[in-house]
Length: 226
Length: 399
Image (cartoon, rainbow over all chains, first blue to last red; front, side, top):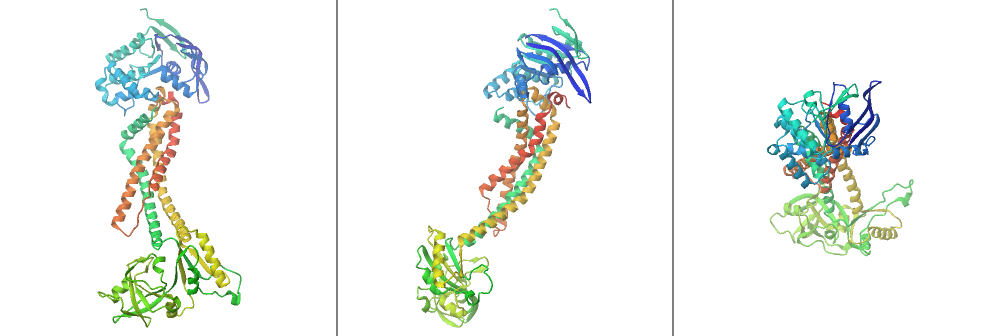
């Protein structure tokens, strides 16, 4: 499903080249549950952004669903993001002036899905995530857990193949964090590849594959025996 | 993205920042108000002036003695101008396509009746004046179709003269002294009102030949004629020129078709309307700067939202469209408010000062709204492009 081959990414800081990722090789299959852990600055988020096609590698190749997506232009990248990738962020990233329902609807709107289809999907998602009675509330009228549930509903609305979560529990208390993780993990059963970036070992330890990153390289992988 | 969704999304940000949106829209609204108000007054004036001239009909031609052009030096006796005569007017009547001809001489004289004296305009005219000038006789009849050289001493009164000298009595058949000569009253004209300050009701009409005698003039001041509405104007002018050249030996007269004069006047008035509209346009431009400012701020404030949209699969184009849509919505709503305000104030002014003519053509309203939206579009381009070109990763993590 995801195949990274000697992927590097470097940035220019002033006139110095700084390598954020160095020769990453990574294979992730559909239904994999992967956590990426490591200290800040180790390149976790850069890797996540690359997989999410928000960024491009400086060298190496990236294949997603069998297709080479290394050198797509903006329009093609946007289409792949729309169809195959769902994002969940630490800061929720809900649009403050839109209702919960409309936040969930946003990816469907951008993809130009018909009104009837959208209504049905949004209603189903609201129900799945226990948000039906919160449909018309704005984000500032929702609790942290509810906000993250809206964000997960939004991320799954286009039935993505890959779900990327960047510190999804970072702004939540432990109990709510666990609930949110349970919701994300439900997607794994539906053959979605779930990739969670975190520096919380408890959260990271829940994944079946745990990648450890230091200084732009994957230094080790530990597996959880089921 | 479907169009209704674009409207829904742009409206949501419009509503989220109500005060700011209102103030920005107000900038455009004031600009459009100024444009609509000024052009409404300009256009009202335009129509008012044209109506003043058109009250006599439009298919008129005036012929005056003398050629308005400069030719060489002193040509002695050949340079003198032959006057237009009543015979010239008679001859013009026989031209094809010419309907009515009126020889005219005007001046001032004292008129006296019932022991009252009044100085008024004396209009020496022919039988057909009423037809040429589209005016009507109220009682009696107009000057008869006499042999113009042997015209009888008959007079027709303007309504004001009748009011002043024959108040409360029937003037028909009474005698009126015009410049010391006795004239018999045969008719009274309907009230016609003023035309550019010239009171047509404070006038008495006598046969042209008698007026020439009265004012001791060698020739007519003007011949007015009307041609058939469907006739070719250039053809009529050509035949008049030929006839008079033949009679005078050369072209010592000036032919002014009213249609041509109105065209010139109309284009001058159009320029005035356009100029005042452009003045209003300056404030519209200021409104555009307001939109530019607010959209630039919005892009900065909503950077992380732009990053989110990109992460959710929005293409650069869609982000561009969303922000352009917001700028255009602001200016379109501002423009509509300005239209309502402009037309409202124009009509209120008209109610307060009925003498002030006001007219708002539909075309102006449509053009004004169109330019408001265009200004929004132009002002929105730079901020919207900036939004579209933001790096999604950086935008997402902006605070």
